[in-house]
Image (cartoon, rainbow, N blue to C red; front, top):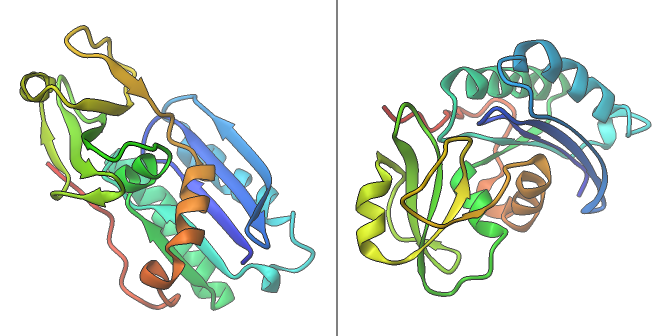
Length: 196
């Protein structure tokens, strides 16, 4: 499977290409609030890894939860490209892609920065989500004494955070493994996971 994978749910903007399920190229930046400027150029550069755009089987894109504006930008770009090329889209829940990178069979949490002192949080057991993503504070998680993984640019003193950096490689690998369950046609309705 040949895909272009995009992650932009945080300050990190990342685009990668996979050919025959193998990573070929990745471009990333951690500069905040520039997704509108850099993402189209990054996607165009990554798409040039393919001799012809018809070689691309799908666009995998993080759908959140995450930054409202960044998710809108990336999903709009992907929908436009997929519609123009009559291509498929693989919408990937951001917290599930982060969870995909760890090997913990017990109950644990995946978190991602939200607003102020809040986080997007989801509980997992192994690779299985135990609940839907929600917005909450670290205080409640601290009481549960379970492992916490994720990404934050905030200074967190209350817990030990096992850091996982969101990136398009995780989005691509998760999309490839779960393509049958997640694959959508270019004209399907795909909505980001917005929490408030």
